[in-house]
Image (cartoon, rainbow, N blue to C red):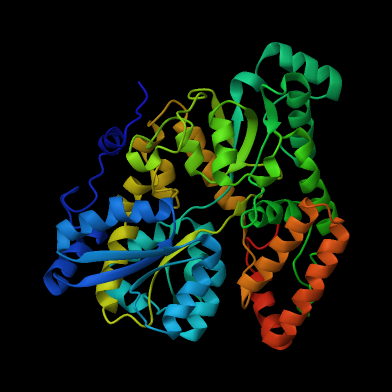
Length: 475
C-alpha cells in the first residue's frame, strides 16, 4: 500500500524532527541540547529562498526547534535569483540575518567579503564530523573553500528525469517507434533520443498528450541549458577567463534547446517550474526532467497540506519511471548550503540550528516530504530502507538521484557568478524570443568580457582555474 500523507511519510520513516529517536546522542541531539542550555529565549533570523523552501523551514524546522530549545526562528525570503543580492545588502546594511540559505555558486564571494563565517571550530566542538562525512561527495565540495567549511550542503538539487512507463512500454508504441527510428523505445539516453521520443509522442497523441515540456520562463532556463551545453562539450571560459559560451557547442545547444518547443504544448515558452510540473502530473506530457521534489509529487507524497493545494493530484501515480537525464551528467542546479552570517550577534546559536537541521535524522525526514523541496543529499538518504519503501519504485528514484549526483555538473561558480548567470539567462531568453542563437551568445559574451575586466582578469582567471579543476565542473 502506497503512503500518501505527510504524517504517514514521517511514520514510515521512523523520523521524529528532533531528539529521542535513538538511544545514543546524535549530532542533531547534541546541537539541540546545547542550544537549549545556552540560548533558550534567543531569536534567530533565517533568510531563505521564497516559496516551498520557506514553507519547509517554517513547518518542519522552526516550529520543532522552538519546542526543543526555546529558540524562536523568524524568517525572510527572496526569489532564487535575488538571494545573493539580498544577502549582500543585509551584510552591508542592517546585518539582521543569523542563518542563511546560500547557493553554492555564490559561496566564494560571500566568504571573501566576510558575509559568512567558517564552521570548522564549531563542528569539532559539537562532534559533527561523522554526519558531515555522510554527505555525498558531489555536494560536499559546495561548502568548502580555501581549506575551510563555510556551509553545510543541505539540498541535493540534481535534475532527475521522469518518464511515463505505461506509454514507453506499450507494445504498440514500441513497435511503431522501432519501425520509424530503428531503435527501441525506452527512457532516452541522449538528447537526440529525447527529441525522437518527444516528437513521436506528440505526432501520435497531441493535443491530448505531448512528448515533453520543461520550464522555459526567465530565471530558470539557465539551469536547463547549462546541462545541455556541457553535454555538447561546451566550456564557459578559457584559461585567460575569456568568455567561450558562444562557441559552436554553445550555439548548437541553445539552438536545439529553443527548437524543443516543436513537440511541447502550446504556450510552453511562458511556463515556469510549476506549470511544467503540473503538465506531467496531469498526464499531458510523457517526458520531464526537473528538480527531485516533483518525483515525489507524482506519487502524491507530501502534498496533503494546505500549502500544497496548488499541486494538482497526480494522475500518473504508479506509472512513472526515474532515470538520469539525457547525456548522463545532469545539472546540480542551484542547491543550498546552510551558513552562518558574518554579521550575526548569535553565531554559535545559529550554528547549532544549522547542525541540527542538517543532521542525519532531521534531514532524512525533511527530504522525504513533498512540501519542503529539500532533496536527498546524503549517502544514508539513498540507502535508507524506509525511504526506499515509501512507494513502489522509490528505490529507483533514489538510485537515479545518487547516479545523477555522482555524475552531475556544478553550476558556474566564479567571482560574481550572479552577473554571468544573468547574462547567460538573458541570451537564452533572447533566443527563445526569436533572436539568432549565435548573435544572442555573442552579445552575452561581449558583456561578460566587460564584467571580467571590471572584476580584474587575473582575479577571475584564478577563480576560473579553481572551478575548472573541480571534478564536477565539466564532463
